[in-house]
Length: 319
Image 1: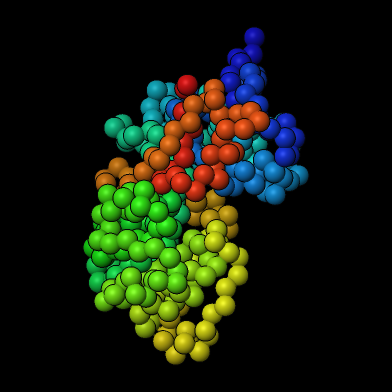
Image 2 (image 1 turned 135 degrees about the vertical axis):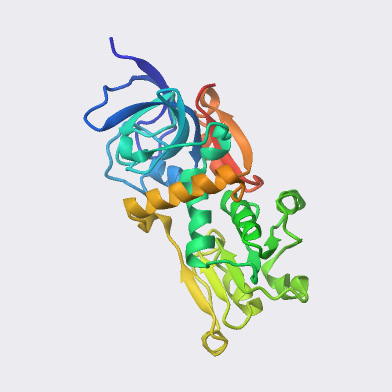
């Protein structure tokens, strides 16, 4: 008899998600069964539910592209390979996936925090160490610093020896940024220069776009690096090009969806090691229970849009 597992299912684009008991298929060649502990929740999951990402992928299917769990009793992280988009994902009690999408974890790792490695961990690792190449002489400004990626960027920049200031729009988020070790917190784009005072960033991290991008470039040091990896505050900006090129500043773009599988796996390995040795921290801001995470309202898709949240949204797959 087929094993039945609980899973959060997308039955039609734009329709409410449902918790259903579905058969767990037998693994094929090169595949394994991972018993899931916790799964990451990301904006791309909502885009997939709406059909804006992988709109031609099969439905019904299980969503979710990153998780932690156990393979043969040992802790692992699962990510990539089209999980949740092209194939059944990890918002479930178990998943069948390619062994290539499974990476061992240290025995003492926090499985809820590690469930964010596939997106938050890889993004933070890549933008800090590969794109910006932050070092001990850098002064770093992190916009949107209370987000899952932003807090992890702070941890990696501090581990590299840089000084860090974060930006947030509420005191609750500012408290989370300070707790992660940032020396100060600033607020809105239009007060950025005054709020920073003598702190002149050599690197700015920008997941916001909109008015924040020109404001950050306006305070960036000559020859500074501006890393753009999101546009949650606006998809367009007006930039003073003459000031940009005369100061020798660089705008460096990063997009996780453009990574090859080899690049994704390399980033995942490095992020997992950094999490294990303490250079990378992933703050779990809220945990949703699998049994409560679907329906007309109040479920996982609504939680993705909660701008009050500081840190990473995680689904408990065992509850």
